Amino acid sequence: MRLWQYPLFLAPKGPAARNSGFSGCCRGCCLTLAESRSPRQQFLTFLLVCLKIYHYFFFMVENNLNQDAFGRDSKQPGQHSGAIYRQITAIFSELGRREQDVAREILRQYPISALCTVATLAERANVSTATVLRLVQRLNLNGYGAFQETVKADVSNLLETPLERLSAQSVAAEPDDTLLSELLNNTAHQLQKCGDPVMDADFRNAIALLAQPKHNIYCAGGHRSRHIAALLTEYLGLLRPNVQFVDGPPESWARHLLEMNAQTVLIVTDIRRYQPSLQRFGVLAAEQGAHVIAISDLWADKRSFGAELLFRMPSASPSPIDSHCGQLLLAEALVGGLAKEIGPSLHDRLEKGEALSCKQSSMCDPQSKDNSEK
Image 1 (tube, one colour):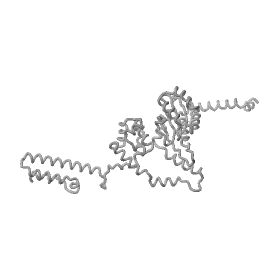
Image 2 (cartoon, rainbow, N blue to C red):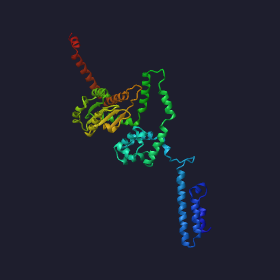
Image 3 (cartoon, rainbow, N blue to C red):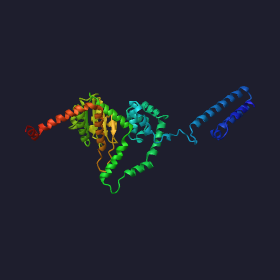
Image 4 (tube, rainbow, N blue to C red):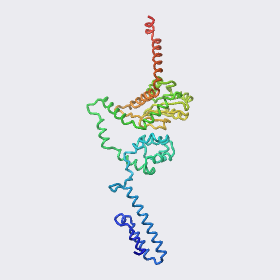
């Protein structure tokens, strides 16, 4: 076998070679090699063809590794379809604080909240673009472009699946159902769907802030949620000292800002349509160093309240008025979580509070006082 015939012998055969165009290229090089009269020119052309063969086989091996048993590309963007949400929630506790901020922003209204540029996502999460890319890498995706393609695949899968249609039909009200039955069914269905590991992590962080004895706690509510803030103030005040309700006209709230610092926790509750003065109050409190916890609805934005932690609770209702069940449930959960965190030492405080309450009632009620004297 002559030197110019070696490339033809080494050249790959079959459809893959024909589709790649390599076989024709190899034969063209062989003709050049055969026509070359100078031994030096023949040797250089031979090395060039061998190099092309090496690159071709390297390409084929890599391509085979990227295909599944059915010959389909195993690295298509849709391989994680419907799983990005689960991936983020599964690793949420392992992420750093800044990466968790990005994860919260992505899951805020997933997948819609993830359909933006890396710069926009970084701005919304108040982090650098490098932090966003680190999170994408943690998801085993090759760059932000692959992340976007995967999210788009999730959009097509999550628009409306048969399972979701079946679930919607199961919770739909029957013609004979009353408004009360419809409200109970819809509320239960919404509350069951809103819990996830991200909310659990935020809840633990909120309890840790409330349980710090050195922290001063303030509660404030919007026009439609002030009653929840007042109730939360009363219940938290039973469990621990230094709990205040931000009341009165918004113009007078500045005096509370004077006392706020890194040892302050501000809980704000609001619902659409949000009270602008409450949002500004939360932002100013955060600028003073306070830890802001916001309890709101599904459309709330953390930045609008200056919130470190934001709990988005469902508020849809068959009535013309948005439901406050989710907000109230979260407030009660904070009270219960704080009581559990304080532990046995809470018993003495509650016992003392009951005794003082009985004494106050007997002092304020003349009839009780007369009966006690008799």
